[in-house]
Length: 333
View 1: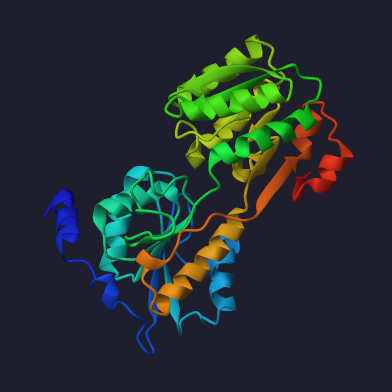
View 2: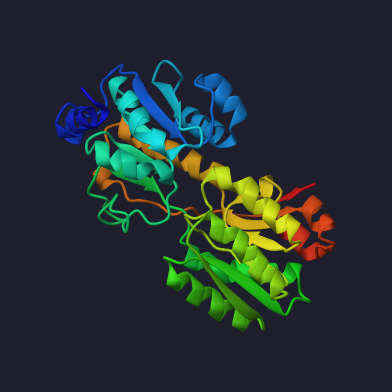
C-alpha cells in the first residue's frame, strides 16, 4: 500500500474510537504523542533536559498529579525542521496508538487532514478558527483544543512602542509584513504614525523577499524594523538567516517570537512559550480525566515576555534605557 492510500485508510476509519467513548479508564496509562518541529531526541528524559517547553509541559503534568509511567508515557517525534515529514510522523504516532497528540501550529494542518478523532492539544497557533481547526474558541466542536498565540494585531502597537524606546532618534521605521495579511500593515502604519514615526511598507511573500526587505529598509535609511509574523520566514530553519540579515544591515529589529532573540536578534515581545506548554498540560490532564476536547474552550496566553539581547544591542551601538531593562523579563548577555 502506498503512503497516500495508507493515510487515506487512516482517515477513513482505522483510527481510535470516537471521542465520546475515550473517557479515562481506571489504571490506564495514556500514550501522549508530542510532535515537534525542531530536532529532539526520541528519549523523553533526554528531550526534556534539552527543551524548556517540553520540560514545562512535563512538569505541568506532574504538578497535576500525573506520574511518568503510571499515568502517562510520552512518544516524541521530530520533523527536524522538515514540514514534509509531518504526514509520516503522524501516521507513525497513530500506529503506536497514541491517545492524545500535543503539538504547535505548523503540524496542525497535517493532523487535521489525517484524523478527526484523536484529541489534539494545540500548544500555540495564530488563529485556529480561521484555519478550521475549531468552530469557535469558546466551543471548539472538533477534536482540537488548547491554546492560541496572542493575535499579532493586538501586539503590534506595543511592539512598536517598545522599539521606539530602544531607538528614540530614528525618524523612519520599516514594517516587514506578510503580503497575505494586509490588515497587519494597516495596524502597523497607524501605530507607527501615532508614535511620530514615518513608516515604510515592505510586503514579502517568501524568504527571498526577506533579504530584499532588509536591503530596501537600509537604502531608505530606516532606523528600525518591525518583523511581523509571516509564513515566509517563521519556520525555525530561517531564524538564523533572518537574524544574520538584521546584523549585517545593522538594523535594530523587533521580533514576534523569542526564539529570534535567543538566536541573536535584538528584542522580542511575545507570549511565554514555556507558559503555553505548561498550560497545554492542563488540557491533556482534563482529557485524561474524561473531558471531550470539543467542549474545552481554547485559551489565549496571559503572560507576555519582553526579551532583550544586550550583546546585540552593544554590537549595534545602542544604549538600553534602564527603565526598559528593569521591565524586561529576560536580558541576554
